Length: 293
Image (cartoon, rainbow, N blue to C red; front, side, top):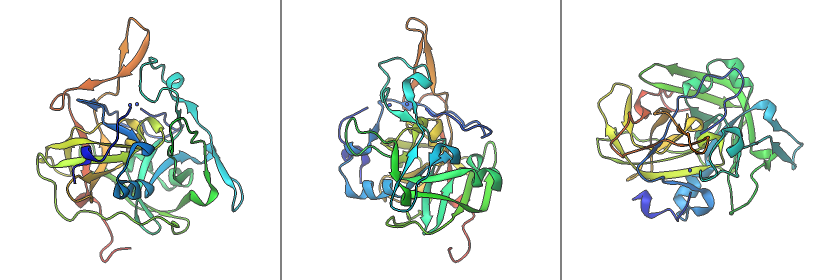
């Protein structure tokens, strides 16, 4: 499956951090910007995978309603929040998530270790499914209350710099109507195609393909040329040939450059083989329970 053939034309971005959270390592755009909103994705398999990714919000930024009601997401104007130049993609969208996670068991989310360092951090986090744009110009400032979950338990985590960076969170209840994502049992080799699903800059769900493994040799992680930003921390990175999770996005290059002429910021653009690359924790580095959840 070549991800670049499954995406329709499109648009680009980084994310605000919650108070007290670890600074999300910056990421960047390599070559052409491959990020797409969910309404620009045609492949049913990709849409299903995107449905099983979660946006991590500060709990205080999700105004919960009762059963059958909608939860209001407190968003900020992306362009204004980061002093972006008007030409930046997604300028008019709202930003709010600080990390991304992936459903890997009925009630377990995989994310980056620096996103939830302690049980207290976890308990202050809302795990929101369906934070995405279903059509151009659509607002993404609310979701059904049933799509909002909270942390019951921080099962395990690791955070090494450089090295593996991951966490497993048990939610307050099984996730309804969304299937856990399958993980790969084999390591991606150098040159293997990749795609990522997540919330760059805390924006509504973006899918980005057109990437490859650049260096498969570091212990605990590999390096890729994925188009990712701060809010992508914790995003599932998929093998483009199998569609299985190959790793977790955790670190990368500086996101923005300052345009002195316009007095605003623009995305940092690197050649596909340039800059430092984006670090992805190997799925084999995650300590999944023996026998599953």
